Image (cartoon, rainbow, N blue to C red; front, top):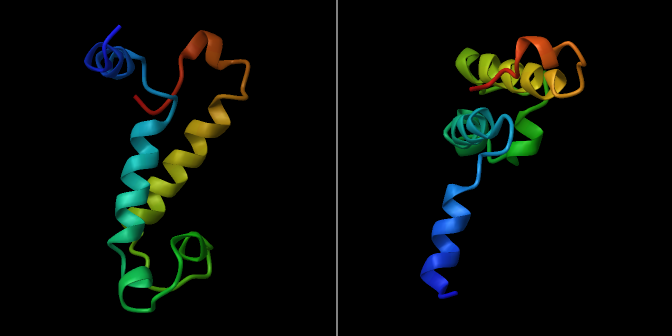
Length: 84
C-alpha cells in the first residue's frame, strides 16, 4: 500500500467522540484575551476563575464537558451521543 492510500484510509476513519467541540474549544481559548494579552497557558485559562475568557468559550467548554460525560452515561445507548 502506498503512502497516499494510507493517508486516505486515515481520513475516512470516523471522528472521535466530541472531537468537533474539542477543536472549537481549542480555537476559542487560543483566541481569547487570557492567552493573548495575559500570556497564560491555555490549560490555566480553562479554570473557572481565569479572567479574559469570553462567555462563548465558557459555553463551548460546558458543551464539551457534557459531551464527554455523555460517553459514560448508559442512557446514551438509547438517546445517542451529544456533540454531532
